[in-house]
Length: 238
Image 1: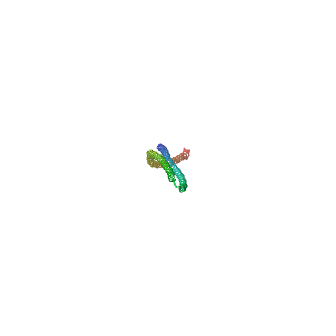
Image 2 (image 1 turned 30 degrees about the vertical axis):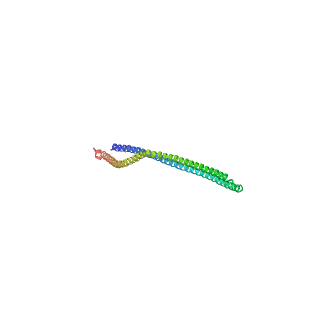
Image 3 (image 1 turned 90 degrees about the horizontal axis):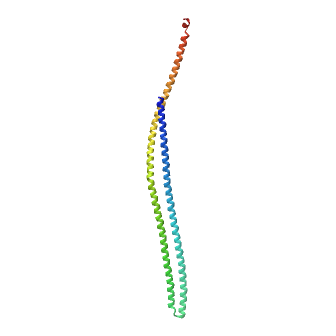
């Protein structure tokens, strides 16, 4: 009986060690999953920061080009106003000369055409500069958008690479959870058997103690009988 109890306790101790090994493996697996999720979260945050920086750079470049275009427009308007004022002054002067002299119409017309041609050339130059600036803004926007698409594709590829690992972790976690539930059930059964063995062992100990007491009492009674037999009077008479 003692050998059986000792063997059951040994088996139970080994199963507890195995269960601890499974628990350690599950803890390692959980930590690995947490690390992978942390890396995914970090990649998402980095991508969001990159997108925000791209947006700020685009907004900054657009505002810069808008300001340059506004400054160029204001400068051109100032030149136009100055030239109009100059034309007006010269027209008035030529009108005075024509009135006084009566023959400077062709010269005045040529001067006006010269001023108007210069004005049209400046307007054409400004239009070309504006078109170039718009092309530069569009090219910068296209480049930034292309970098954004590349970064997004890289992020999606990273998610696809991590997905099988995450699915494997979830599968292993479920299997481990099922195994732990089964092990817990078996452990409960064996603990119940161990309780029964302990109860039987206590009963055996009580019976052994009772048997010892009865044996001791019987020996004492036998000794008392022997003493009485030795001390009987008829033995002395004989």
